[in-house]
Image (cartoon, rainbow, N blue to C red):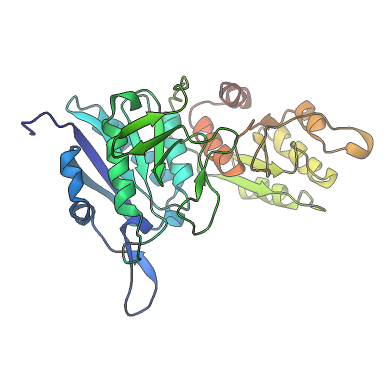
Length: 333
């Protein structure tokens, strides 16, 4: 038990580039560093907080599943329930960190800080960003002003909220942005500064997550065969990522109607990285427009991109028993 005044943080490690090196035999980059090694690579952490390392996984981001995400959320909740723990830091791969952070944010009731740290350059590269991002995440997690702000992600000296952040570049260290909103804060050696006030949160009391939710991206000339296949395969929810303000080719509509008739919720998102859904088109030559889809009972994802709308639908189905309940949870955003 720490005897000085430094706060206690729990560090959950999941793998990812932040804990990776290049294999000298194969040339492939893979997870190699343990949580203890990460801590040793950042000696400045001892000046920020006491850090308890709790290994969770050692996988690349693209291999993290929604069931793992929900399990991690439960582990984080249990850690934060301890009065001695001031906050949590999670190291994670960049490919799916926005989904994991968002799921944790949706279900976590605690107002203690939870901060995800990532890296775009592995530990063997010149200018590896992981150690600095981990240090900055710890600084954010111990800052009193971080309390009540939900789950956060720290990268490249910027702080993003889990609800808004997305990865926008395949390799650049400045890959993470928050379209429509911008970063919520900045972190420097001198301290943590927030640019926006905290947003009120309404955690979802999900008993589980429903993994059988399919994300369907539509493009010009698309039809409803992916949706009909999803119904035949037993999927419990479908997210359709449409074009523009939230529209789909008219040939997709019969599949949406079939899903809704089977009481399978259909959520509509847009493939545009910025902006909000605008259900204004419909009828005649505009059949398949957002206004038509709204009239059918499709649930708007509002500003959520397809991958996050899928996560929220998984959580919503795990919390309520009918489409109207799912609709209410999406409307509360």
